[in-house]
Image (cartoon, rainbow over all chains, first blue to last red; front, top):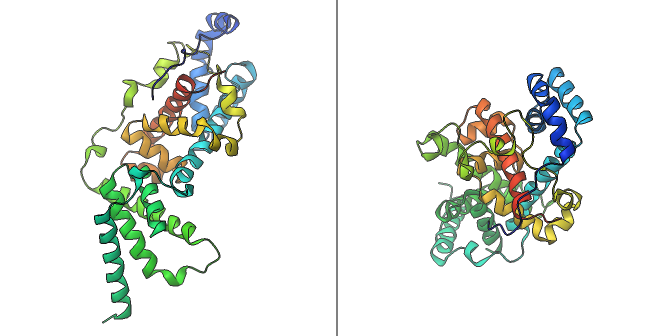
Length: 123
Length: 185
């Protein structure tokens, strides 16, 4: 995809200040933003352990910047799920590049006729 | 045959290859004829056919896994990012390098039905296309087909441990891609 938008800015100064103070300890305790981001993905695939759940909740409580992340992933999941299904399956008029060509169409019709004939005459 | 066009478009979007998609449509049409007694008319014909197509796609990936292909070479790949996307989003002590919420309000606050009508859905598709083949396959098996991680990993030809890492990378790469490319505050 082409990008014409400016890149996302750095986090707010207050966040950077807090991270400068607490970051090393948070990392040591497995409570960093990166750990939280990994847990946000992990919880979509498996139940978190009690230790992970505690770290997840603690970080979510402490960090305003990370708090919206689970919702972003949930939205991403919902949109991904509908995007492939709807783009092709639900679309009344598939794009020209997604149309069967004549040879393929004939081949499919031929195999269907063969299956019909086989069904009519099982021997 | 009108349904076969939609089946084909769907198959192309999933497997990314016209020849394979044609074979899949052929398999679905034949399977539908052979299993026609199983169609009780309670659902739409198209819905029933798409159900068969989803199974055929999974069978295709499972069969492909048994065949040595480029998909079974590298257990962990990083796609277009050229590295772990998390390394680009977080610094050495695990703090965000960028504001992860910048411009994401639009994305999160737009209901799915509305997203279908505007650019958000095409941005999601575009970002999914930016994933490496393996990431896209694993992510779509997990998120679109909603397979358990172990099954998605098996079909994608990776270990369940690698799958967890790859899924995390895929989600973060997609999230960051949407933030970078589409969502404007």
